[in-house]
Amino acid sequence: MSDAALGPGAFGGWAGPTLPELAARWGASYRWLVTLAAMIGTVATILSATIVNVALPQVMGAFGIGQDHAQLISTAFLAAVTGTMLLNGWLVDSFGCRLTFAAAIAMFVAGSVVSGAAPNEGVLIVGRVLQGAAAGMVQPLGMQIIFQVFPPEKRGSAMGLYAVGVVLAPALGPTLGGVIVDGFGWRAVFFMGVPVALLGLALGLVFLPGPARDGVRRRFDGPGFVLLVTALLALLTGLASGQREGWASNRVMMELGLAAAAGIGFVLWELRTDAPMLNPRLFAVRGFACSAAVGLVYGAGLFGSTYLIPLFVQTIQGFSATRAGLLLMPAGLAMVVVFPIAGRLADRFSPPAPIATGLVLFGLSVWLMAGVGTDTPFWSFALWILVGRVGFGLAMPSMNAGGLRALPPRWVGQGSGAINFARQFGGALGVNLLSIHLERRTQFHSQALTATQEGGAATRELLRELERLLAGDGIAEGTRQAMAQDYLGQMILSQASMLAFRDTFLLVALACLAALVPVAIMRWGGRK
Image 1 (tube, rainbow, N blue to C red):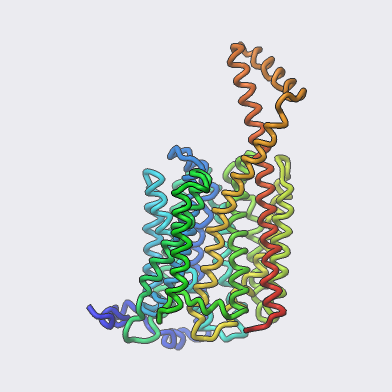
Image 2 (image 1 turned 135 degrees about the horizontal axis):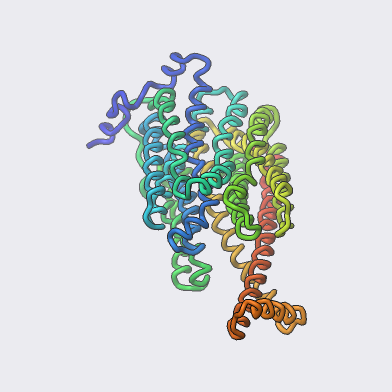
């Protein structure tokens, strides 16, 4: 079958009316209706990015797995989003927004059912990959629609509305997930997004346009896609294996080497092919490159902190899943107010000012978290999180609109996918690297604290007191000594974990400080 036969015309009425036909049918309100349809689909799919975080302890208990396997449940979703996000341009050009959106939502519903009914962690990870692949196809679509239907002076406001779906959903995911886990069990969290997804599907079939033109289908960049997926899988697998296998082990060196080779091959191939999935020349445009660099850091900070915070309060402070999720609710609600305001600011001010302000606020937030302890009050922690999310909300519309505004019109479609790719890749990489840093710092502090306990008078007194209490319960002497030593080890591990969380939050703050460099280049370097 020829490429022409597989083009948009082959789908007949399923491809849907064109954008001008829909605009004429629905009038001036169409631009907001189509934005709403894309946003609801985004909410349904992106919600699943973080909703699983508060359910991880229950999943680990149900399947009898450790933290190294449980982490894959979160990173599999983010990696799949990153791997499929750049397919958006080819899918929309070939089949139109309507069919692309419908296929992605159907894939998401299938992935939700697989995840919720999974008999083991392997099937659950497959379901998460399906969910993430769907989210990767849907997320850039909304930005592309906004730039097609809104004039330049209104795009920032529309981007602010759309950003509610992109960022508010993962921010509120742990809140909703905690309530559902405690009330209905961990499997229910995977079914929560299905009704919203079906609503988005219905709206998308009505308001999203079909292909802009008939004719020969755009060629699929198969080699580029294979190289990209290989690089992502090898990189994330190598990083996940490093702590377990040893960073100098043959397996880890081979995986990271393969990631580097595939990544370099991807860039070289994209430079020479006439139909690139991601045109590296986009990053020669200074404004876009700076926005993408900041997006990488923001993605790592947002997804990384949303992973770390529920883990900290459940393992160190003993919060329930519901209470851990509620900790993020004030920040999520604040973003509902911030995003429309930030959208208007994006229309009135040049991008560097709102982006720099947002980075400072986000960095201040995680710097405050670097002082957390077992007795940190709930509302103090919630306020710190709120400050960071307000900063993110201020920066994101300007980051997106500013990056795409710097591109020529013919590159806007690829640019929307690329800037989302940068943020999502930052999220996947951030969760992975922060988990590694957390584990390494826990080991470091545990060894340091253990060394300080040897021969200490206070330690000997504590052990004697513990043995005295256990003797009162009739426990044999040998068992008393082992139980006292075990209790001391647990105390040391808990203290080491708290110190490691502090170090990890501080690392995120330093990353935000470093991200001010591309903002400065954007501000004083002008456009290239």
